Length: 354
Image (cartoon, rainbow, N blue to C red; front, side, top):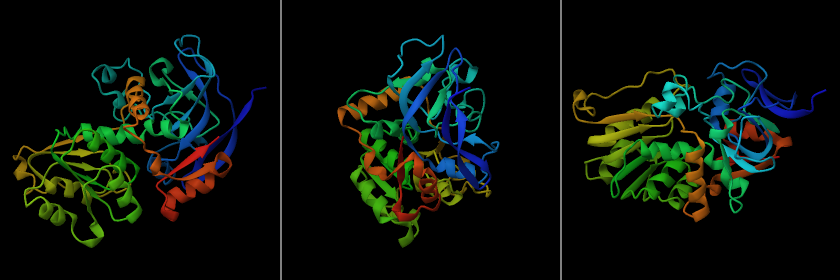
């Protein structure tokens, strides 16, 4: 009889539960990780609300770290008991998309995001790592789990938002929304040498974190049109780049409006919950001819990217843990998920310990 574990699952749209499941066995190229820490993502909330079609009983979660429990027969370079992290995106590195460099689109659009959408996620006591040799990353001894777990998705996604804005040192950038992804983009923009970072956010606790992470100016959209405020701050010129980290048509349009001619818009917000189409304001888009570029993307995966994020944490250049506003044991996962769903108690990111 198989040993069992506890897993946090979606039972049906709008309903979750903690259930018992067998501890999985690894395939030849897979690994099984025993979870030690995890983060709840707003994407999990979207999934439970019905934004993504997943079957009942599917395990949620895609931000977990732990120790190697068991290795498939073809997996080398790791040992049982070794501390590891796994990116939220787990590419195969064999398909044409991966070979062309689009690892998050593995096998097709958004295909690298396998946890929960194509297989059980990792908000469980044990989880499967596909293509383990390419997706397991050792955690250095001096990087605690509570810090390392931010590399799985938040930092990788936020940094990608800045990378896709093609930000040059000394340039100006506006980052719309300072949730965990937007805050991570602020960290990334600061690291990449932005000359001025304008963070758009209305919640005081998130404004304070944005400043802590490197934002120079705060635009509070509850106090007036953020486009007008940003244009005033830039002398009517606009910014070199804008990062959309919220996932609403209004913020996407605002990003287009605040970028100067020849500027870049990087979209990392998830737009699946709002059925309204995204609008391109023709005046701000120069009737399609003012050299503005729009780049989209999903969290990049793979062990090399995770290893680079580990080095940034080891060096002390990056510490995302101030985003952790709440800590819960796995026994309290449903309470933590409810808080993340309602955004009560000024929650930003809840850490789950196992």
